[in-house]
Length: 453
Image (cartoon, rainbow, N blue to C red; front, side, top):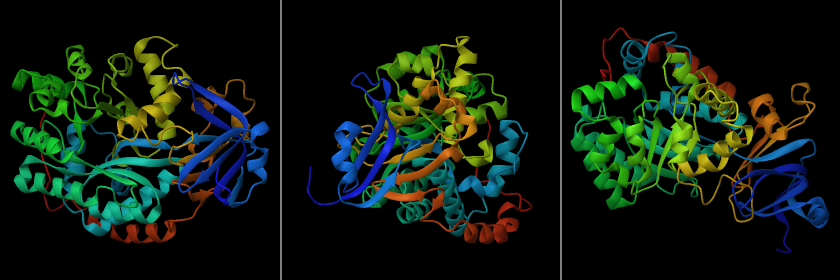
């Protein structure tokens, strides 16, 4: 270990760990040493006394807190926080056609910037250190990420109705921003979905992904109606259409997948790339969809399933903590088995599985030497988290996002003792409020797209 002062030392905390079989465990009264944005050591108190007394540029007393890998929001549309609560109690088709896609035709760079700033503040306060975003004006989102210190996996969304220029913009963005924000930004090609992107465009996207070493992030088999419509129109499920286009041979992140059928599982099991699915259960409950992401079957097929919120226009929040609890509860209900998902399994999906879903499984998702220092400290001293009989269950089913006290990305403290250090929320809220009347106007009769599945 270097004799120079560490950048950051966290002492006295309980550390969530993964063993070599990826089982969740906890290391009590431990310290974490961070240097150059990387975890240098995670040690129990008996071994950590020297580190606790060592020089450090910054120190955090972690007593009464659990240190966890930062949560990852594996699929969202961050700027859509500006539309939170605007399209309530609507079926999917009306939600898109009558509200969201008309409003999105008004979007400007400034609207997206303000939405992204507000979203990043919410993510940081909720213990999220990385988010996978699929939206428009994404250079603006990348600039906010660079400034506020988060990690992000970004893709410029496109529809075939935009012509070849949409696909080209998605590629140009991915190449331009790849590795940005001192390496905290990774990028993807981002076709919207098989029902808004033609087979030819999907195949062209797969070719571009292979040629440029880029992953792909899209919506597919979002619900059972989409799958049934795809079978009626094309004789193939959305997953089979992705396979036909060659996308299952790329590194692919599929949003939602509640319409994935048993016949799709062999295709997903033998993909040529890294295929993952992001699940956002709160939105499925709000829309009244009859099925949810088949987490158990996907996991049996070797497909990582990461946790997500989708955009706040459908979910109303970017709270991945809530997604973790809901995923466990919805899976128990769907499977009719209280033993699935367990709290430890839910924590695994929230950490390593989510890191793998966004292609970062080698660098984040666990707290161990050599990993990037994306860390959150969770305060368990509140009455709603006491007493602690099962720490995993307390974290999943009792703790809340508001219990996150400190959020750290790449060794940089973005929030300490609930104080945001990199974003000015009141200024964002004031300006966004001034712009809302123009943003939400639907009197023009335009839509960016038509939902017809």
